[in-house]
Image 1: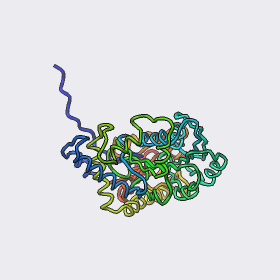
Image 2 (image 1 turned 90 degrees about the vertical axis):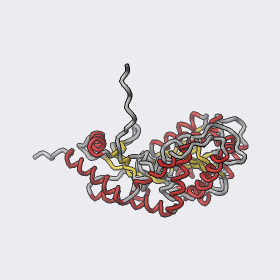
Image 3 (image 1 turned 60 degrees about the vertical axis):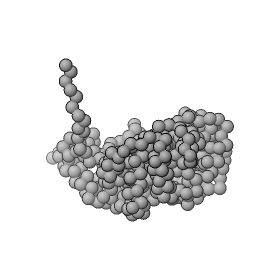
Length: 380
């Protein structure tokens, strides 16, 4: 007889990498509530509340918002698939892994991609993006990463929205590491499409991608000449998530919706601006104390992303070995570099329930303690 398999018992971790973060306890509790069917009117009432709260967190009331039944990368691809047709020109700011991913997905959908690149650790100046738009007046989309998770750089999105407004191009923003943790004012800034995730600043499990669309984006989608993939069709998704009576499209991830409902409720109860300030205080404290200890922050000082800080691995240190020690000895996860182009770095995320000055001090204390045992002594 085969040996019985033990019940699942994963180790406890403090997740302070680039995401996922630890889940809010109330969100985990919400996932234990009674299951409803995806066509149950009671569940549709929950979806209505999720959509209303999501609009408050995005500050997006002029168009629509909805929680896509997939990950942040799918939110990225959904935007490209719905707003771009083969042969369209797309201007993409690339200064990290996820800007490059936007460009790659756009190419796969047949777009003519104009990359405006900057070195990792720096933002792409809006002046260069606007110049690329002026040199390519036929461009249909300008895309940037609001919070570049691979480098810890925050893009000045508000100013870009002002510059793009009035052109024939739509503005798409990757808000995966900013929604719920960094100031976003979707309507006022003139953003046309934004996507995020649930497992970072919101503090829910991974598995959904909150989206926001402007009226201009909705007009673009309605005017398409070619169909989009069925599972990413925003007109069909709107008919299920937003319009009533709901029209069946897929079986929604019910328990993930419960968790998202709870973290959005908590966000509004805390206050969106207060939540931004909490993430700001935690991230700034970690970056400042890291520099005081002799570590170098990768991102340029005026454009640092508070929820995610990338610090350079010191000379003579095996960065991956430090990560292994932190995980094995302290149950602490921090991230490493992402992609071949990145320099040796650690990525420290202070997001959701872990966005506190106390956690910032705990992570830095653990990191410096391990480093003291790892440093190569100076000869002579």
